[in-house]
Structure formats: C-alpha cells, structure tokens
Image (tube, rainbow, N blue to C red):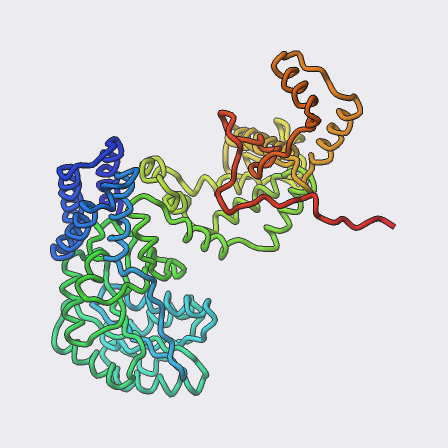
Length: 522
C-alpha cells in the first residue's frame, strides 16, 4: 500500500546524501517534495501541514546544522515525525479486571468487520484467552452464517441465537451474550455489529443502544484502508456519534495509496491498534507505529520478521538441525526440504523480503518471485526415494528422468536443483569445517595443525623486515607475540581490511574460552 509513498520519499533522501551541508533552501525544497508525496498518497491536508511544520522546525535547528551527517539527520527527523503521526507507541487492549472483557466492533458495511472479528478472536486465542464471538449484525443477509463459518475456521465458538437477515433484536442479543460468556467462562466477548453503506441516524442509534446495553471495555472502529479521504470523514462521524477507543485498519495489502493510515490517528486522536494485511485469518497483528514508519522509509521491519519466524519455526526441529550441523553430518535433501517448508510457513517470499532494509530499490525483481517455484522444488524432492534424498550422488540420468516424471517437471529442472544443492552442501561444509569454533568440526583439525607446527620449531622468515622485528622482540625479552586485543576471533581473520584490528563495539567483550572447565575423564 505504501509503495508509491516509500519510493517518493526514498528518492527525496537519496538526493540529500550527496550534499555535505544542507542550506535552508535545501531543507525547504526537501519539505516541498515530502509535502507533494504525502498529498499524492491521499493524506489529509491538516495532517500534511502539521507534519511538514514539525519537520521544518526541527530540520532548520541545531539538530541538523551541527550534525556530522545532515542528510541522515533529516531522515531521522522524518522517521520520528512519522512515528508521532501514526500514534507513537503500540496500543494494546485494556482487559477488564473482572471478566469478561467486552470488545465492540463498529464501522461501515464492507469494511470487513465480520472477517476481522474472526481474526481478532483467533489472535486472542493464541494469546491465551477464551473469546466468544457474538452475531449482532442481524440486518445484512447471511451475516450470521458468515460469522459462524469464520468462527469455525478460527476455532472460536459463536453466540448466534437469532437467524438474522432482518430477524431479531441486536441489542437483546448483545445483552444476552454477556450472560452466556459468564456461564461458559469466556474471558473476552467480541461483538460484531451491523453497518451501512453510509453513515445514517438509524445505524448510529443502533450502535449507541448496543454500547449502552453492554458497556464495552473497548470500542474498535474498523476502517477500510483503501477508502482514502472518506475514511477520515466516516471516522469523525463515528467519533462524534458513538465514540471509539481505537482504530483497526483492514485491507492494508491493497493497492490504495495509504493516506487513511496516516490521517485517521491524527484527525480522531484515537490510536491505530490492529492492522489486517491479507485474507487469511492469520494475516492480522498489533499495529506498531515505529515498524510501519520503517517500512514507509524503506528501513525494513526486521522485528516483525523475527516474530513471524518464532511463530512458524519448530524449536525442536531447529535444535535437531543445529546439532546435526555441529556434529559434522552432511546436509541432505531431506534437511533442505524441512528448511524450505519452515520458510514457506512464513508466508509469501516477497512479503518477507520487503521486510528487509533497502528492498524497496529492488521491488520490481521481488514482485517477479513466484512462490510456486518452492512448491515445484518440494515436489521434485518428494519424488525421490529416501535413499536418494540422503545420498544425492546416486541420482543418475535414469533416476532423474523418473523423478521428473513423478514430480511433473522436466529433467532440466531436476538437474538444476541437484546442482544447486551440491553447491549449498559444499558451502555448509566450509562453514562447519573452516571456522575453528569450539564444538564445531574443523576445530580439532586446526588444533592438530597448530600442534604439528609447534613441533617443527620456529621458522626463519624470508622477509628481512619480519626478521628484524622478531630480533627486536627477542632482544628485549618480549619475543613472544602479544595477545591480540579483544575483537574478532582469529579464525575470522583477526582484523578488518586495511590492517585495522577487528574491534567489537564499545562495551562488548569476547568471552575468555580458556577459562571454561572441562570434566576430566576417569
């Protein structure tokens, strides 16, 4: 959604990096470009004016003029102001002291309230709660049935005493759901209410009646992020009529320009609490202003990537792979398939790459990545016998033809996979055997080489400068080499290019591995 805005801002900042100092004219020109970029992204005019005023005020001060790198300082200011516009800090649900916590969803028809109710319930369930979905939208045809289907997919029960489609009293259903939750020991109630194609008095009054009947702890206003400027007007109308505590943005994976996300928080004064980024129930999470600002400025969102990896990866499987890697066993096609399937759980590969810093510059190449390529690779490996997966070298021409026929691919694709696998296996051996780290294969080989070199005695260097340095060291009784400063491990080069010692950042120390005690053999 933010691709266009991100590209414009990235081009603005790239022109700044070539300048050693920034004049007032440079800052004014940059502010003008940012203003145009925000307006083109459909951001509300009052938000743009406030944003530009804060950026210019800070950029023209000592914060930039006295900085060693003014261009980076301007980027830092824009990043901080984006975070401020988006809400500053992550806002979480305020749970009631005495359950159940009542969450009421409000918004226009078509914003995605019913689907979002299932996503929110699934997220709450993963957080350790026992939610109950309430079908209080009794006007839209089949809204009750839709919520029941979504609830079944999320694994969450649905309270639906009325058939809906114009039959039943939504206020009475909402009131009865609280008693049902207490009776069935649900600690969270999510109420799905009716919407309209536009704001009208009847819809607003019904939302007010439900609010007064259940006294919700959180009222969440659901906004379709693709609506643009009209989302701000609708949010303001709901704010004045019903009132709400937080905003939920849906359809953030769309191709709209993203102005609603940057405008709703500033206009209504209510934080964005959740964001929905896809059609699946798992495409839903807390809204983090700092991470969203990082994505807009092409700084990446590594924290979200790590969180997704922690959810998707199997800890036991990862530990087993690490142990195998450390023991010196060969990396097999079976291991390769397991690793690929773990990555596949994270979602589309393009989305993962877009979370890395600087990926906006290769967005066109990322968009051409086809996730079906992974499925084809998986099909090829699964068409092999267990013996072939463990011993890829036995895969000859006839076996490759059989594997290609079994996987619905060509022999060329099988050849390409096997060739790439051998390259990956070779790299894994080099990493495991060449680092000389304790507990890793290769460490023993390096220790043996060092022992043999010691037995041969001191070698005379052919370089007269080295001989002179060695003679000077032995003359003052300090011929033994001095211990290297705390820095990079010797096996990684012992230093940086250019002869600089490989120092770690201040405050970081390499552990003294010599102090580790080993158990003596009896």
